[in-house]
Length: 107
Image (cartoon, rainbow, N blue to C red; front, side):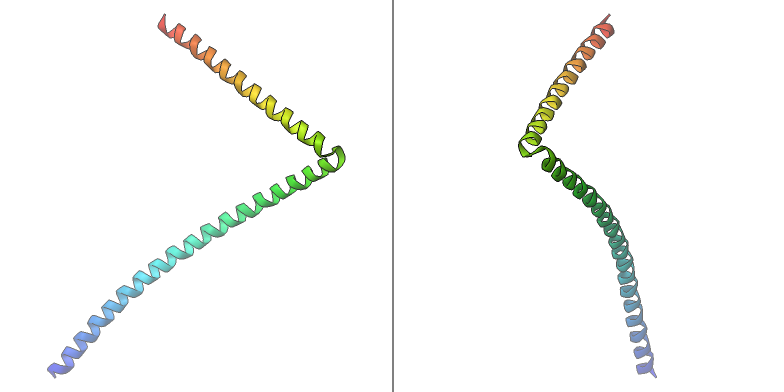
């Protein structure tokens, strides 16, 4: 009888151990499923961005086909130069505004 009681106790102990492992694996599985869902969402967003970029590429190919590669390169260089000039001007305006604010605050 004592042997049967010991066996039942050992089996119950193993059952609790397996139950605990099962719960941990179940929790991990839920975490992994959530992670997979997030990754699917990210892939979906990336696919949308990729499609948009492909459309831009196709449009650029169309522009090059109509205007020629040299004119497009020139236009891009001009646009870059204008962007740099605008950035410098914004920086100057910020510096001037900052100086005005400091002089007003110091009075």
